[in-house]
Image (cartoon, each protein chain N blue to C red):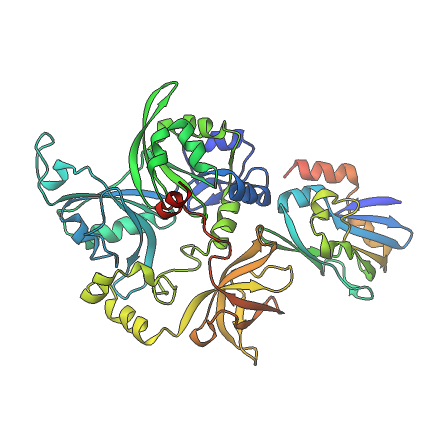
Length: 123
Length: 395
């Protein structure tokens, strides 16, 4: 299994043609206290770069974009009752949704952990 | 942020781990530990806020109260010494130029009343201290200088910082440094001396604030504010609180934010701030926009600022629209967010007056998605002010 990152501060765990997506620790830190998360329903089709989820902190609303194209297989229902999971465990329990990949070549443009760390350090 | 000015506490904020943002032309702390934690801390203990971006203005001279009444609709002439009130700086058409606090001081500056410094001030020599919003202070000064008579002195005290200590433990915390401040009740003010390790420091403290809690706003010379902030924050009950929680606290308290919930296109009646129109002034009909404002007051305005409890967990924000059954825009949300105390979204909105009754369901639209709000009396969270009757009952 490999983990990729986007410049929009999402992480994506890829296992074959299945992926799990969430936002990074850096992203949750920037957003602050998260009070609401809307994840996509299973069965919805996502286009790479299109709106996939909404995350709201006390301060502001932000969109989460689909890092790759594919079909949503599951949203993280736990976030409806406990959106703060994204703050406490952004890269594990606070995952947003799972999907199948339409085009694995889209992963080529994404960063690995080392490149993402360098990207965050440059901000 | 590069163009924003630094306030006297800038380096102190950074040392406390603040995240700084540009606001009202200054670099200011949005948060330290996190908005939720800071908000809840202020409701249960005491939060320390830097509000040095706000304008501190002295208006003085012979007949200064009467002069101020040409731009404010409140009872200023009969305002007691070291008493303060909330008022509105009004444009000639009745629009709100700013909202502010005005306090009458015992001191009367002889020089501002045409006397030499060592002479006694004349009987009608008056001295007022105003605190106005940071983003509007320069406009306020220009408007007052243009509108008030030439013999009235208007002085912007740019060499003073302003901090607020707010919360149920604020009174005890400030009294540990300056015991005499404990004598103030809500909306009273006075001059005090902080006997600090480095020497005596003069403070001007008022028992007021912008959170709905008991607390103080403290004006101090900029050179002493860092020592004062450090001494207050050294108290176990006091933590620094940023602008983020300041906004969520004032929203829960039902207090309008200038430039968002009120502006030059809203009137005091529409904004449900009719309490700022004092009885004598209403009868005299002699404040800016009086004809329009009093007609609205008598016949009822077309729209009103109301509080909304929003269904679900997703906040509606400023800019969301109030819609009718057909989906047409009939009003707008001017402030909105998630209430840390109530753990649900709340908002302020302007709605048609016939929808302003508590309990009325309001249809809202934000980014193409429908929401439902219910009109609710404000404040959303009960006020906890230090009033005389309450403490006498306790004694």
